[in-house]
Length: 419
Image (cartoon, rainbow, N blue to C red):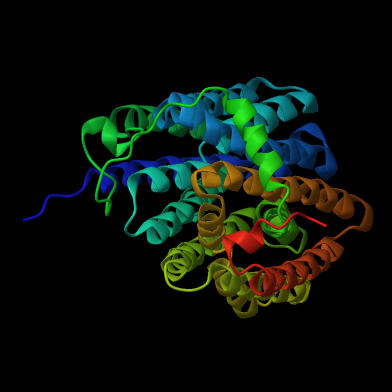
């Protein structure tokens, strides 16, 4: 019987780490109402901490990719988990809103950003040749799994015992993953005398110095292409419509319409169930179907689902809301596998770092909308304008993706300078 390739063990541990990263990052959405009730902070103020978290979650990604090249995957991910544990655990002592920004915003944002999607892109690039798209989809689905596992548990803890036990649970979970990462993940298959799954010969990798300089250089070169900007702007809209709006504000928005927070958290987690299926299937498709076409379809469907969400909230019709959950959930992060595949195809060895910058745009979009939606709710009394605006932006992203399909047919065409 053929033995199991070590790549699958590494991928399994990475999946656990990514589950944690997603759960840790999504936690502030559960804590908005409890923090509002205890401290009297407005949703705009609390959303600012979420925005900083989202911004750093994205902006540190390209530097994390370069640091993984320089110092190794497991060192970077282990340090990131320790930062998450510190940021979450110390919140139990906070008394002012700036401390929420510093801890949940800065520390947890930097920690989760260093082991999120760029981690998946780097790991699959090193350990897999065969099944690369499928594994990317599975690892990306880890984000949805983290949401599925953590949100109902943390919502229950926050509702019955207060938000502090929820924060300590996140800190403990982050610490528990550190030994798994340290002892079971290796930076490359060549480190233990193997080749990547499906590779015919080993790859000689030389640690690169100047991680920050390399990340900036890659951005400068990639930004000279139309292709990069089509992907980056589209992915910014992706972040705005998922992590920034639904991931942050779905629970308090549902609560505004009379839905208990634990029920809303369960619905958001249910999105994660269908997201797992949708993202894994998207990874499988990205090995077989033009990734640019996939992006156009995904963004279009998401836009339509968001445009009908205000009516579902107003009607409080459970069957209709479940239809939205299924439809939207299948599309939540299905955009990631084709985006990773396109970055790798066009930018070659720098693909992981380029994806880091594209992912940074995703989080910038998420950060802006997280605050804007909170302020909109404070001033207008509901989130309707935010839902409609996000839906329209998704349709714009679909249009942009269709232009990539017609205008970028090869690497040579992708290298055409902007303007």
